[in-house]
Image (spheres, rainbow, N blue to C red):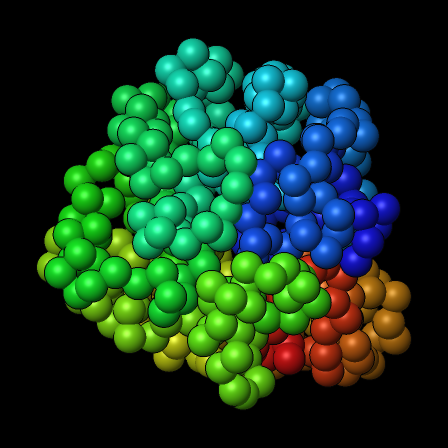
Length: 394
């Protein structure tokens, strides 16, 4: 992907992205914005809030509506994936206006904001007024606590992230999740310190942590010398991997989280489900993902019961839509011959390659009911998610 190719609205695996602003003042060595020339860059608006929300309306009611009914769709909207919506005043003002307009014009659904910035009570109050649910993913790698200069710019240290969580916990319509990335061995503290860290997260007002490794592939700025010198073990580890991940650190963090009653997940979609009090929407609880993404998580029993009910439901489309109708709609959506798409045994099978954003659209429409299998996925952004990159679609 190039800078010019970044869509204004696009389907990622856990949410729909809305990106009217490109460029981030921060300079994080591992960030996918690096290869796009958007890291350590002044944010530039390419659409007004009004234009961005109009594009969301058009997207929800356009081609996508052939497979996802906009009247019932609740797919979250994530604002600002190619910037940080908190790091400049114009970004913050745009975020408030976008949320106001979404609340006026879009069926109710969560708005997600991923940030490394500092929150303040006035901003949170302005975002609370429209009444739309807002889920903050507070990105904190712990690199500064580890003494590794992987990040530059006006970004939060650990204490600020925890302060942010406490501020969010006092709002009416907002919740906060810790986005723990990249979770790699070089950033792991001692066992005792890691246990204390999980305790601090659990007591801060955070709802959960989502733990993500260092994504490998074209989205990783390997030319950044900080990666080669500071994360050399993770970068040099052998094998074909979608991510470099600290499995040993995960085991300690997971044990500590379970003891503290603090949810710790590997997929953002699991945290979203927890916040909404719903079964996870994409099928993380279904093979082949369950073994590595669901079962190892520190997940509350009540939440596991919600997903367990989804797993125990009759396979396929029974009770909501017949398989032939689904297959016909998907074939039309993908402009494929009717015989190229079939539904059976709890699977939606596509006998062709499929674009990544189209796969994710189908995941949002049918992932709770059907495993979605395609011959392959054509990458359309800097990384493939855990569904497109490591499961039935691969």
